[in-house]
Length: 557
Image 1 (cartoon, rainbow, N blue to C red):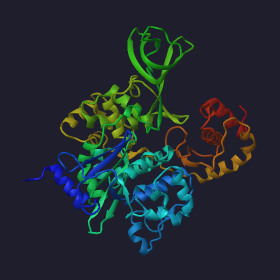
Image 2 (tube, helix red, strand yellow):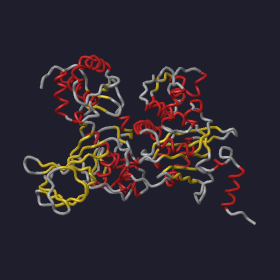
Image 3 (cartoon, rainbow, N blue to C red):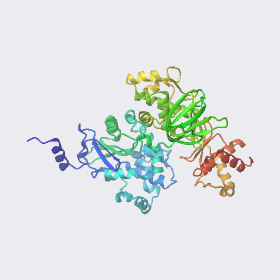
Image 4 (cartoon, rainbow, N blue to C red):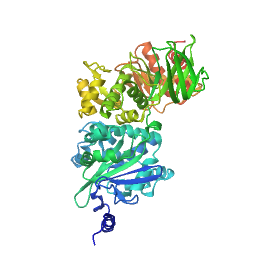
C-alpha cells in the first residue's frame, strides 16, 4: 500500500537528523505574536519536516551575538588591523587587505571572524555569562566557548534571542547589516528581498563535505526570521530569494518602530489654511491632530484628512493656520508616493521611493536631529493622509537607499537629464523593468548607495582636538545647565560636503565645515550641545542651544 505524503515525511524525520539530511530542503522560520512558523521553500505544500526544537548550525551567526554585546555594553574596542599572516589568510580575506583596518560595522557586514574573536576583545567569560544571563537567554549562549560555527542550537532559541535583542543594539546591527544586501552576499537577492529586511549571512561545511548556509535577522517591521538550505549563504540566497520573498509573512508597516530617521514637514507651503475643523465641525486652534478633520483654505477649497497623532496645527499671527507633521523617513517617502505617483506598478513605486528619499537629502535641511522640508510644487508634494499599505511596502522595500550623483528631479510626464518621468517609469515597469533599471535609465550619472555610505566620514581631527580642549573649560558652566549629560568621548567631527551643519545623534557625529573661524566654532559648539542635551527638551530648543553656544565661545547673545 503506498505511503501518503505525510507518512513519508514522518518516516523521513525518523531516519534522518536535521544536520545529516533533514536540511536537504530549504526552510524559513519566523516568530510572530509568540508563535513560530516554519515553511519549506522546496515542497509544493510548503509543509516543513522541521520543528522549532530541531537544531541547526550556528555558523557565522556567533559574530552577530558578539556585535550585540559590544553595542549594548557601549564597548570602545580597537579596530582590527589585517596582518597578512598566512595562518589568517582564509579568515582575513573577509576583513581587509594587509596593513589596513576594519571597524565593527564593516566587520559584521563582511563577516570578519578575527574582529569578533573574544580573546582579541578581552571579553571575560564570567562577564559574558552574566550579561546574557540577566537577559534570560539560553545556557549555551551564556558560555562564551560555544561561539563557534559548529555549535548546534534550536531554531526556537535563535528566533527568541533575536526577538529580545535590546532595541538600540538591534538598530545598530540593522544599520551594519544593510551593506550585506547592497554589496555583500545578498546582492543577488535584493531585487526580491529589498533592503528593509536585514540579516547576517552564514555558511557551515558539514561533515559530509556539503555546505549549509542561509541568513538570519529581522524583517522591516522587526519580525525575527531564520533561513537555511544546502549551499553557501551566497548560493542559497541567489537560488531561493524569490521563494523566500513569497513565503515570508505580511508585515504591519504602519506601526513599525524601525523607521528611526525623522522628517519634519510643513504642509501646504503654497496654500494658506483658513481653518481646521473636527468631524463635528468644532474648530481647532492648535495642538495635535488625531482622527478625521476638514481643512479649509483661503482660496475656498476644502480637503478631508485623517491623522494618527503625527500632525500638528498652530495658529499664526495673521490668523492663518500652519499644519506640520513629524514622520518617520519611510512614512514620509510613502506619502510622497501616494501624492506624486501611485503603486499600480510596484517596481515604478520603488524607483520613485528612492528618488523621493534622495531629493529630501539633497534639498531638505537638517534641524534638531530631523530632516525638514516644505510640502510644495517647488520641492515635492507630501500627502497629509496616513500612507497606503502598498506605498509603505515600496518605501520599506527600498529602506535607506538613495542615489549618489548630481541633483535629481522627477516629474509626472516630462523627461530630461537626471529627471524621472513618472509616466515613463510606469511604462517601463509594465515591460518588466526592475526599479534599479528604471533608475539607471532616468539617472544615468547616478549610482545607488545607502544613507550610511552617503554619510561616510572624512574626519576633521583638528576640529575634534579643539572640541576636546574646549569641553574641559566648559565643564563648570555646563554642569549647572538642566538636561546636560557629558558624553563619554568627544564626538567624531566629519567634513560637511553639502547642506547645513548637523549632528548625527545615532552615531554621535558632527558634520561641520571647520573650526578656524568664529562662526565655525559657534556652529561646532552648537551641534555639540545638541548631542549633550539630546535626552532633554533643551536639546531641541534652537534658541536655547544657540545662546548657550555663543556664551561658551565668548560671544554673548
